[in-house]
Length: 220
Length: 230
Image (tube, rainbow over all chains, first blue to last red):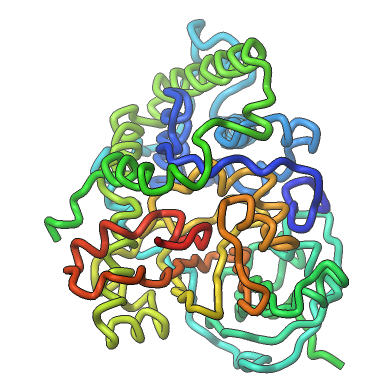
């Protein structure tokens, strides 16, 4: 989606001071963080939970107006309603009657479950069944696609020429489209600042981004 | 490993003093511009909505509030920048370790028991006199939780995410770090599940320090590339 979450290269925002606080300041922030990670650590079968794609679908004018953890709150609300775990009415009247929901023999994550999950080996690398198309040092061009669904290919890289800096093996592919892309080789691609930003780029500067093989084609 | 058991709060309060000379601790930008009345109103709205969500999901036996507390406790007291700081300090005194970090940081954190959610596929890059690395996530807020804990608010701010890729030198200057023209700036935009940790330059005059003493000098923000160590 070409929307506000894809912020790289935009002007006009005011840079904040480098705060040194612990990021969970308010009690509700601690709760929504704990809730999101609890659900993530032990998902209910068939129920996906809040995702980055849910956050990206927040209307842009509201996205800019929301503090960070309010976006997580939004995503969790959207996800539980979409999953049929609860209704908007129940959220509006939490003290009223709450309908039971059939989650089979599911039991919620315990403190031990979440700690084990947070310390688990969370690599996204998967066994490779195909040879990588590119090698370190190869010149590539990022395809100029603008999918309507979720994509991890930032706009500022599209159509730009770069060099393969590192091959990470095969990783889970996260974009919505194409749905049949399967697992994909993942690369760090290095772009010259001038290639991305023209006269504003400094000759000495390089910007790196991770892109999946399907985002790239060999440079002509 | 007992030396690593500095709590996150303790670590941050130490590094606050180290960084306080660089940027005033006042809020700025969107948060600062918000009128306080409206700010309070929004905070209470978020608090009410969160309470409703937690209450209904608890009644339906979908979440256990004790598990939510365990999540917060984990990030507040167990993982945090003290873990990355120790890796950096060791890389300064142990050439073999430094090389292993640069070649395959994932293998190192697996070996050390520091792999975890949002950060197992770790890449370590290092600063030098002529190279300065800066980490960002332009699309959301990707950050190496297992070695740095949760990202600071400034890292998740729209302004930082927007400007770090187009004007890294301007961002660093506003953060109090002026780079010479001949320094190469390398920005790392975490667009997949790869996460980055920066080895800052070792401060001068620290030749005689132990790994513990060196680790105490390493700030969170220096491991993102947002500051140099004095």
